[in-house]
Image (cartoon, rainbow, N blue to C red):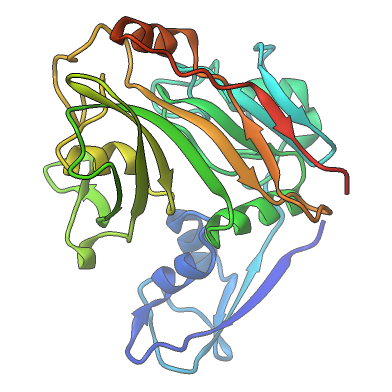
Length: 319
């Protein structure tokens, strides 16, 4: 596999950092990886190698970046049971259980979804960058539901573009404390790092974070809680949890952004990625993947007086 060479023209009216510009053009790559490519001489601005990541671009400058093939992952595959909703030669749709980390991180070096996927489909190793082979999007450790894993590099880029261009339609089920100000609504509030705690995210002023938009509608009203269907139009870290807390309706069981002592007997936050509609490579109609509400969350609704069934299925029309 050869290097991937891309060219962009900076069309801003005022100067901008090189690494920030590339991060906006290539959201599938982390800022640190792009900075590494700049440092190693893989980026040319105009006719000369970039000087540094913080180099200021001028209007009309051409930026060329050469991206070498991903390094083989050093991850060890693990024979971890996975609930596979759908699989073909390009991707796997998995119903991730709560408690499973998507990829290795500090304190979670084993038992991750990535390592289970590698054991199931070893041909995906090295896709999309080291440590996260095949990962297209992420779910928090305690969030259950539909997640996609690409099995080859072209599919990985295709799916990343679907998310980046907001063509993927994501549906979450969330039980929140209280009642939203309106039965349906749209939340627009930028998300960035919490300045007081770098391990957390926060709703921040627009100029200090990244734009984030969520839409919601009420499915069921209980005396002290509300079951919502939430559609995040952007994919910021902890976006739904932050937005719900920001409007005064934190997700039940979210002890980070909500109540320190959950209002109901629950061992994790009540947030489930129930449905994903996305266009797959070589297909003309969008595919739909659905994951049932897990037993622990169903039990919470039963105790409140009404359950909310959802089927487990995939709808993928033939190409």
